[in-house]
Image (cartoon, rainbow, N blue to C red; front, side, top):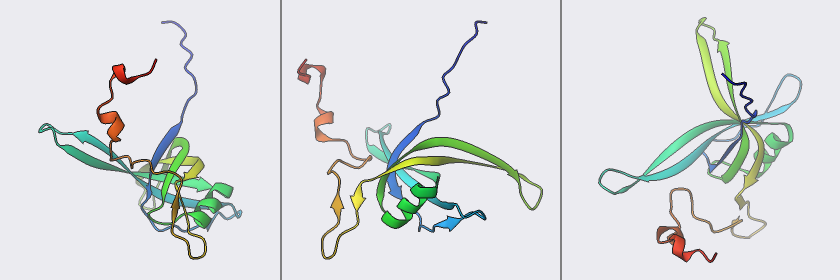
Length: 148
């Protein structure tokens, strides 16, 4: 078998809404850490040609400045995009049972909504459809519609 050199690529990008109340915590050495559950929807057509929506609940963790930024800017229900890597931890619990957890270690976060300033309505970066919606332009697009 030939020597195959795979790139070391572990990149996760996902949009969704924060599904839990946020609590900024600190490690014994004082490093800020925050855990979030990201609710991300996807849509598909079932056997009867009806659109169905499935939500994935993705465990994520952020550290240091990123954790502080999330704690100070976001809240349960905030729409965000996270970028990071998938990590798996294993440990033995108090009952001597082997445990395993897979989570996204967040490298960066993009806020799709900003908290309102004094007396203003909440603002959004864009009016792009949520993941469970299909843009109208994509429904009827064909290769004939492409200008090149």
